[in-house]
Image (cartoon, rainbow, N blue to C red):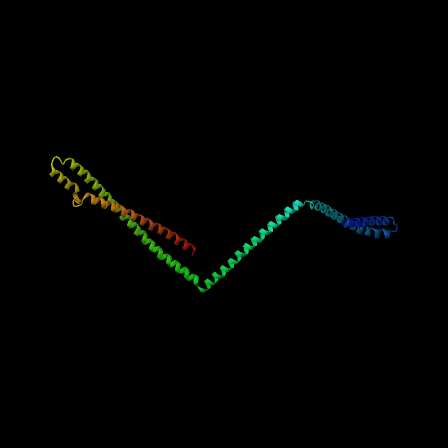
Length: 245
């Protein structure tokens, strides 16, 4: 089809050139002036025709390149596979986007309904009020924990003091036993002096009290640490809730 157009244009060019030649051979001045005008028109037509020829030539060259590339079946199949993969990915993204859009629309309606009914503001007020109350309770528990830790330290000091007394009494008893052979009455007096403020208690009973106190301290220490951890978790939770509100 393009070649036919080119042939038609070539014939047109030949006809134009022949007419130009015939007009130039005419003698009368009037004919010359008329021929000059016609020549301008023909020249414009020629330029237009040449432009069309260049365009058709370009189209033919492009068509040939496309025709040559069209025989690369493997490349075409690869491109088609990529296109299908992109189409599938695009369909999935569209589906995901629709889900998100639907979810946002649904929650926006719910949020709007909550605001219209005043329920949201009431709940926020309740939560903030509960936050203030819980914060006050935690502050009280914090100072209570500090007081218990202080008492635990004092108990520890008492236990250490008792252990030192027991150790000192045992040393005095050992000394008294070594001196027993010299004077039994001196041994008895030494024992009484060794006991000092706790002379009514036996050493074994004192040791038992010390052991019991140690065990109680361990239990109290574990309980205090547990409460402290719960307080920290509670504070973190309330701070998060307060930020959300």
